[in-house]
Length: 576
Picture 1 (tube, one colour):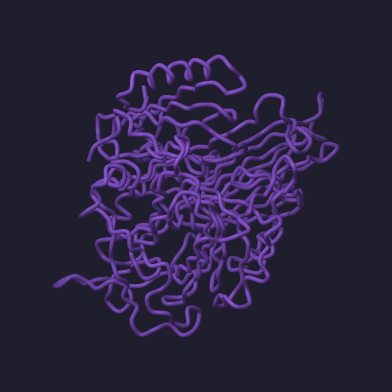
Picture 2 (picture 1 turned 90 degrees about the horizontal axis):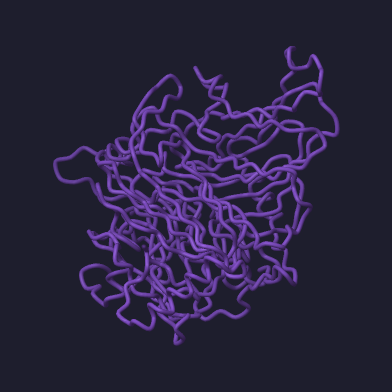
């Protein structure tokens, strides 16, 4: 089940022995089996009932719990009419790129009636990540948390919490999200926005007909709680706060950070944040809203609503508190366009950079890249009326290349050397036509189109500067890199200056992440070591921008040692 297809009997004997060791030896971890039945089931929110694609009849889907060092075998069976693939967001997938999940990148999707076993081992990671569908807009309902515990005997670098609680933000559409994006791509205009935000699938009392669909976090006085926050929303960065309570940020994207206190945090789609909540020392005779609403920088329409859950203290024994109406306190969130808060919050994030949890920032750089990211247009088809700017279609691009999804998987084409007609290894390392990226937009907003990739030798140290553009208005873009964590060594507003800005880079304790918000009207610089062979997607985690083409792929070649090579594909890898 999920064993790589190899012809060597000696290797199979070794693999069987190694698997046996995984099952019995806590030093290496254990093998954990999960089964995901992808099915349709009815869900009612906002007084609207519709059939959604879900896993095991759960919304959000089931949580994955494992320890660092564990092997996971997750059998996904597709019972729905849609093609399906699942991405294990933030998992490094060392030598297991076949299990990463983005459709037509590392695998063909799982077709109706078919199944696939995702087989990977968690190496050197602990914290909160999440899984979600990685094809079209299915992740609107196909998502759930991944909780990675320490190896046994290794404590948290902070006081052990009394209890741990996953809090997953999402978006709810009264209509089918697949129909929403299909219509948008056909007309060339922006898609209809969601009807509500959700906490653990529940919209809360600020929405019509939703008082009973409210997430309630019941706590005890004088305790510490670890809240594992995940932003699984399709298209919105979110501010989050709990009224009259301070949160201590201790971890982002499953990497520890220097702890700092905040009343409000920002979390973009694709990011996770672990926070410590210390409850009040005695029963407060009140309840408290926990709310989230969007941080908005773009010009288009957006879901201008607020999701609320309730923080509720357990009543003292033999008290009358439970029978009386308690006052309800509400937090004050930043303004919708508060870029100043977003910038200050991001600047507080620093790696622990300790002996146990070092920040291994590449100090020398082998390859420099400069990518522009942003929106543009593509021509309207002949005899069609389009709803994009000036009668065009909305498009999005990296270095003016709007990524065209292939019809077969990039990883297979690379592995078997059959990439002719699938992709070309000529993605531009800098913009073909430089311009004033954050100044007056150029007259020509048309983007090019192609399936282009960057090819990197194994162990190449990379510095990538991503520059927002104001072609159709400046906007924040949360960029996610598959297969790697990276260090955010610098960021700023305006155009990146290669002569001055690198002198201000933080190469000591920059935060380590897998998803970063490129500032609206600004730039961000990241560094990573290309030590993971395979094909790795990079894309905006605003799903609408990915649908419009704001995505590209990196190919990392094999190294010289067996542990530096991508293993052959498993026998049950889906076919296109």
